[in-house]
Length: 145
Image (cartoon, rainbow, N blue to C red; front, side, top):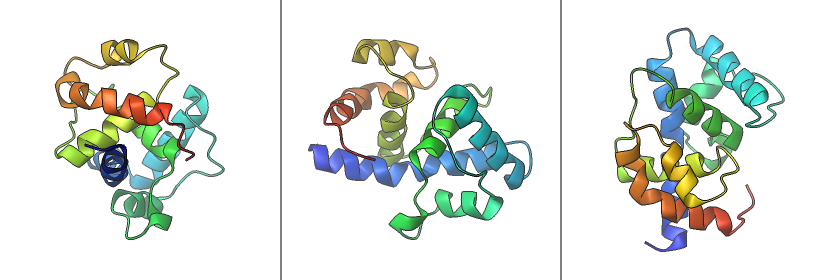
């Protein structure tokens, strides 16, 4: 897989993080938006200017255009929250695996690829471990997003 192929696949898979958050979150979409934004702020995953409403989350989960694509803070926050849920949500397609791996590498300032790999929850590691090295390389390319 080329760098461009991985990036395209990862971007296509990122909305699945928001989709899963909406599917298994145990409250209204409006409250899920507040939780997502507050998590970004508190955990240092981004600084959203406003809390997304339910309609915004649904657009991010199934974007019709690049303008509807979820922002990086939202995908990072969703992965942060999903990785701690007892339901153990998993990506379902290769593209989703690429998107989740892309977000995982950007979740923290990892010292090494091995550190990022070791921090994966045991149940999520099989789905992402093979893709982390490509995500790590992509991150090293310093693409601006």
